[in-house]
Image (cartoon, rainbow, N blue to C red; front, side, top):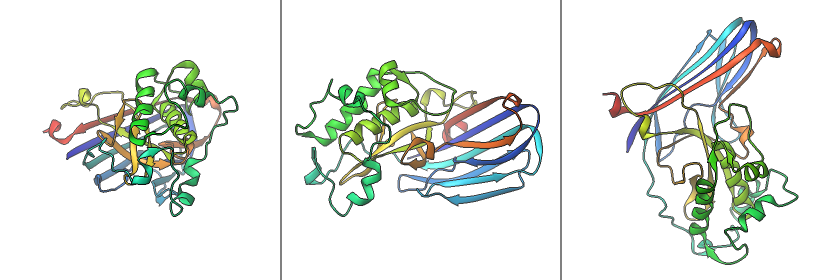
Length: 294
């Protein structure tokens, strides 16, 4: 068990005053048996006219933030305290019928899992399948846990991390061609590969604890993180982080789950003005253990 403290700040700057529109924020971690939210605070500058919280279709906590003024500056500061319990992964407990792949989800679960099995990105030339063929023999029996760990490691070991400030994700064929990408790109590639093999998979956004960045000083930089979950009968939704080769929730703080990445954007919004008015966005994320701040 560990107590993590997260500071997440996002700043927008504009050439001159622009009229601020609605912004949508996903930063409040999900409560579960393996992570318990102790405290969450949100400070917005300039002061919004309204902050309204709701649960989206996936049960994520989403803040809708409204403004009634113009400004040349907009900042969101979140501070989070969470009690985190790492799972004993990869000690998979798998139902007998699913211990070997391929298998078919049971009838009582299949309808609910169906949207997470369906591929999202078009792949007419089967780039994902041809990549899988380089290290898996599709259609042959193989232990389910071993297969998923192999897939996770193939991305972690075979691709280079390349931080990109542009919004959105690469399509899997682009990631395969470039052999590099961001955490969001790697999560999408693993999701699409898992779905092509018949697994239910979903996208996760949140934070990751990096021990090298821990200590009493709050460092600059940092970013949100993305990974995926795959549904394994007997274990439920299991975390896989192909960027870092992590299986299970170790060092991962879950904020939002979604079927596709565009449904789990940490922060986005609107303003009235020209494109040239926007001078840029700066994001800083720090994750520390509470003991490091004592």
